[in-house]
Length: 168
Image 1 (cartoon, rainbow, N blue to C red):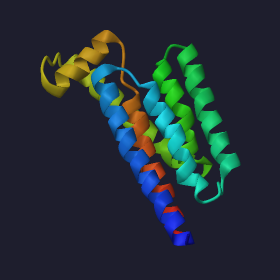
Image 2 (cartoon, rainbow, N blue to C red):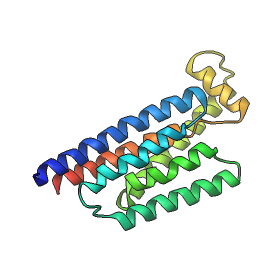
Image 3 (cartoon, one colour):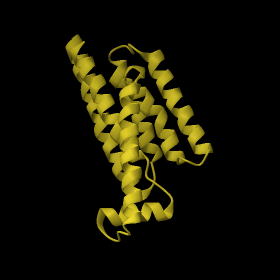
Image 4 (cartoon, rainbow, N blue to C red):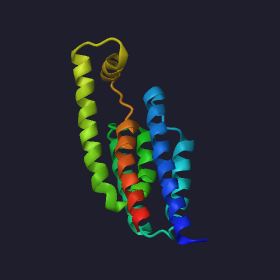
């Protein structure tokens, strides 16, 4: 088994993770739920994504996962994040890794501000149908499918890590 095959398989797995995250975001947007099986699949995909490379950053990946989960759990305790979003944070941290946390945080901040502004604007404009109506409804219900910004922010960070892996 050549080293290039291992790197290729790792990169393909990371791309699969990115696609899965977009599916998780879509499901959360429709149902306000993050399925346990999706979180478990993300956890399982970490094994080929980094294990084929002999876990080059296992300690820092675990640190990133625990850090994000601790933040998510704290936000869940404060009722500012759903339990599904909190449980999603650990596998996100594993796949993002410590080196890409800043990328993830920056994109998450920008996307979250944009989403908040869109929800407020839609509610202020009293939109009733289409995407604007859905956003206005989020404001009135007081809940947001936060897997959308989490996953959207994670995808570039994970793909950036995959590119670095391919170049190594």
